[in-house]
Length: 92
Image (cartoon, rainbow, N blue to C red; front, side):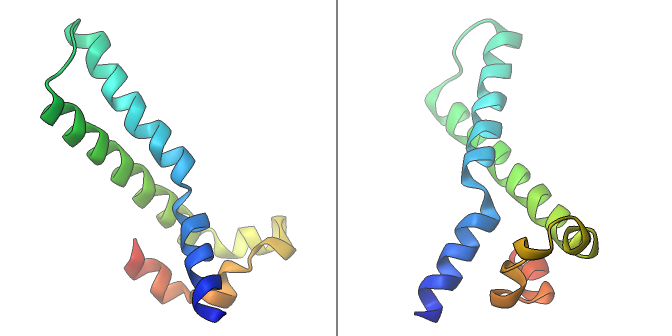
């Protein structure tokens, strides 16, 4: 049961929806700038770069705002119960 809770915590930590949107925005931005569709490999690489850069930024924000989040949302820091701040930093 603990493993399932940790997996759920990691998925919530990654914020896949926001990272997915960032990847899409990178590809759309290139389409707007160059005026045509990029090759499939370029689109995949650009999407992947945008996805992981966004994910990394979100995790870093969670790491450095731990004290602020405890004040603003006291019941919402359950991720710390499952993932220590050090694990959070290494996961980033």
